[in-house]
Every structure is written in C-alpha cells, then in structure tokens.
Image 1 (tube, rainbow, N blue to C red):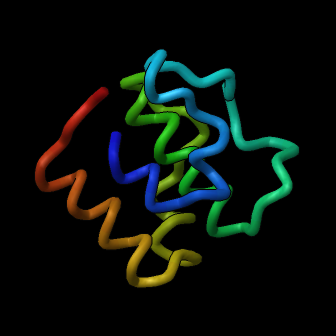
Image 2: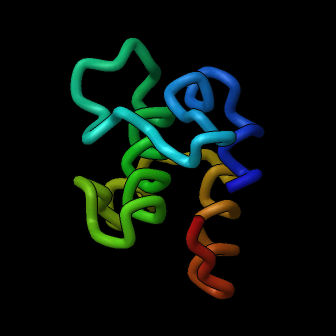
Length: 80
C-alpha cells in the first residue's frame, strides 16, 4: 500500500517487501492522535477487517489531508 509510505513515522512498522506488519493495534505507539487513527485505518485495510478504526472519531479529529486518504479508499477500496 503505497499510501502508507507517505507517512514515514507509520511506515516504519511495515515491511513492504515481505508484505507484513507486526502491528495488531495502534495502542502504545509513540505517535500523535491523528497518526494513531491513521494506523488503525491502515491496519483495517491491511487485514480486511476493523482494527479499532472508528469513522466518527476519524471525522472529528483528522486533518483534511488524512480525511482525503480515507475518503479516497472508501470510494475506491483497495487491499494489499
């Protein structure tokens, strides 16, 4: 998922060559609140199921750019 690479502080938790991540949640990661929401979104897309991602929380807290990433996915879903 190329979009994760646009978030270097988040991308470090993914191994794109091996197509895996060791993350199961955003809990305890040293990231900002918005980044934690994006981690939950990326994990949900990565695993194809909800991984603590909440659209209401995202809508209320994320910047416009981050919301655009989610809206783009919603309009044209993709999976790794």
